[in-house]
Image 1: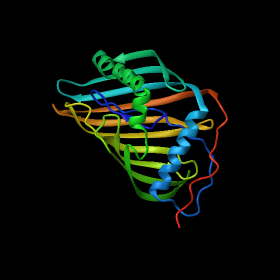
Image 2: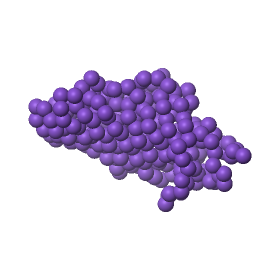
Image 3: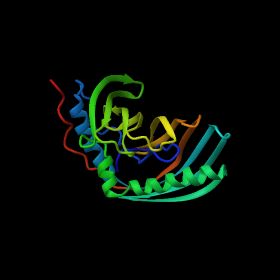
Image 4: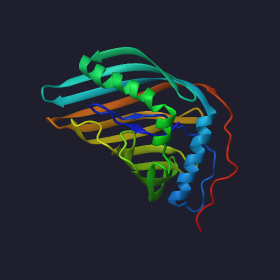
Length: 251
């Protein structure tokens, strides 16, 4: 499974879950450089993706628009079932608010996420050096532990890619937070889309906890979008196959 932020029609910010296993690697005494962090991240992402076989959860999609020709809002609650390697089943539990937003935004979001699971799309959107340029922006200690901060710049203008910064856990080599914007504006009608995604621990893995974005509409107005992820259940997982060691620290 790949890290991606997927923009869409009005404003879309969907993340294909990337998985994080806790406690896999000891914190290096000397910080790594950007290339070493990325190499470790790619390796650990592969190991975690191979370990997680299936999960279930619930999402709450919310969209608020204020502007011409008037304010609109909508909410949709969706149950999700994931089956490795590339299957997602969505069951809509409830819909409230603007039918226009539900049909043209929420429903297209679900369809786009299924399309993003295709092998070619995953290859073209993976968070690796083939698709992104990485620059070290910092190394800091947080209450949750040390993290690397990397600037990411897409190598192509692809609507499935993003530019911005990522926070990488220095123990697990897993992205814990993303802030950015789409590499390619998903629609003529939107601009200045800002995206944030946060991850939370679920058992031995880390999955999306909150996704939110805001866009300016060219005809005037603002749109705010969010996805709240909850009620996760890991329904099948295999023992994590760990690499023998972390790539050596820089001297």
